Length: 508
Ligand SMILES: Nc1ncnc2c1ncn2[C@@H]1O[C@H](COP(=O)(O)OP(=O)(O)OP(=O)(O)O)[C@@H](O)[C@H]1O
Image (cartoon, rainbow, N blue to C red; front, side, top):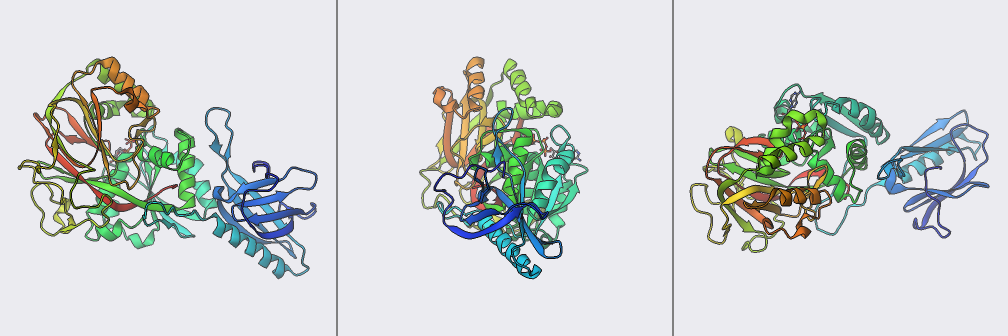
């Protein structure tokens, strides 16, 4: 097993569960090797060669099949990390097949091969973390995936990348994709509004964050939204920002990577199939719109970079570097009032409240798109026409360079904005930068954000507060706001967290 690691003298793979002597490869003739399946590894002792092992945590599939008139085989496929020529290690495919021929009886050999294969599959299942009391699940096998793919996202390579990178890995993991290529904006949203979701075990979005925003809000427009949100969602990075994909890669403990390596890591996470709850934020505007958001809300500098750099989409993630430099040159100040409910001081509600309260009658500013009743009520918010509740904090500054409320760790592939954020931490991480910051100081913040060390700069203009709800009232309507990277007209907005509202495929 060339890409497996050397087994240490006493092994660290746990107790040995199965042992056997099998020849390598599907063809007869080779000498038999001693093979052991432990709780965490498949270990191979090669005659005259070094020992090798494949971690079952890297394994995505295993199969058994007859071979010739009397023998049988079992095989397994893994994607262990290998040193790359440049940068961080990359996951690479490794398939190994073993031939079972010790019995004269073909059926007995097949039975042994099937037993090994089944045990490998069982032991390869991802372990659900128990630390936070959240309900984890694992996708079934075989698994039916509806893949919503935007061919125009990012540099316009999503379909080719899906076929070249994703599809072969899904085949190894017994996941069958059905591809739905979007033809226009809102196509995916319309698709999931009417879809019979019982046909699918997972909804995969191969695009940027914008398409997932559409899918989420399409699901929320269904009368059965609550049940619909139990279908796990999965993001595969095909866009230019790919903030949720970068966050999930980070939560899994992987090195920071981009492009094909990030796509491979995210596809591997899908192949393993662990899914967990994710918080959503309900955003309401003064004009009566309501959105559900998984990533972030922005106003000022970051929102401007996001929207102004749309024209450079073909550059991929580099569009944000160019956009940042352009917006720095014509740095603007935005006036308004920012208020929030700190995460630590909210009375009476647990931080990770699970079931959102229902709201039968929509009130101004919280009405659901399409007018369905019983969407989750925003119990922490006062109507936008009224003052914020007295226990909220009103920020004394009224001039800002930027306000950004983020609920995942990454703002983009290369921007680790909220290193402490997790999928269901029950928190909005509210950042704001007051007016008066110099261009150099702002540039330093963005450079440090690449490593997530911007708060260590102790810049007096940069503030970060964990909150459960916020309100932003701009003094004018000039400029844009963004929700999950998509543009919104500038108007008063407020939002609150709804803990663990949907499910997402994750590595940890
Ligand atoms: N076939 C299509 N042609 C044009 N636009 C599309 C098409 N399909 C979807 N869209 C729209 O494109 C918008 C942007 O897509 P998305 O966010 O997924 O990619 P991106 O902007 O390149 O990535 P990121 O958000 O990571 O920067 C979405 O709001 C979606 O409505």
